[in-house]
Length: 339
Image (cartoon, rainbow, N blue to C red):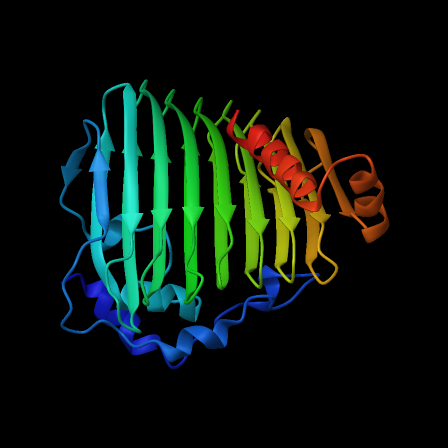
């Protein structure tokens, strides 16, 4: 067993779920207390990881992990409840697929971790599918390290559980002249928290991250993005789209940071959210933290649209049903993300 697992278990009762500095304008939208109702999976051995493509798998050690185990309780819970962990290497250009599925039909924590290195000069397309259909509380962490001159295009589809809380983290590290194009679609979830961290180090790296969150019924999704420019002439663009219907709640918080050592960088952070239900709530909060004067571009924007009953009535009078309006909006958001 990895020593990081035992270290995490010892910290479970001493760590907070969330640090105040992680949410400077909106605090604690995630209902963290729900995770306390689930026990560690001691004695249970299953794997919900399936990989397709010419990955090379390597032995893993504690120093390979990027996500810290000792900063927040949710991260400690992740390591303490690890069911399977893989270190993958992509050394050939081509198409790859990673599927993560819950397997335990009990009220326990079920956690998976994948570290993927994309070697120098490789260009790959990666599909990620996350499915949570059991009674367990699923936690997934995917880390991608892009070596020099590598390039990946990622399409991610996530369907969190509607009966259990869930957590997911995605981390990207770009080490110079690397490119990432990411399109993510996330639909519903009883209480789903997703963190997305991307770090552009070195020079001349480019990242475009687009996500769409669709909430219906009483689902609740709290999405947190953090992008950091560290090197020279790096470019980062984030677009978060959210749609809430019925009594759903969707929040998209995004922070773009430019460090003091960054030079000639470009960063754009934007969110657009739409409320279609009378009791739904969809919000966006993009922020910028710029710590240097040596920057080419820094922009952030937010729009929050409420589609009122009067608008729905008008559209219905023109032959469109409420479901037609919702379907059109959903298809438009999906097309923006997955095109």
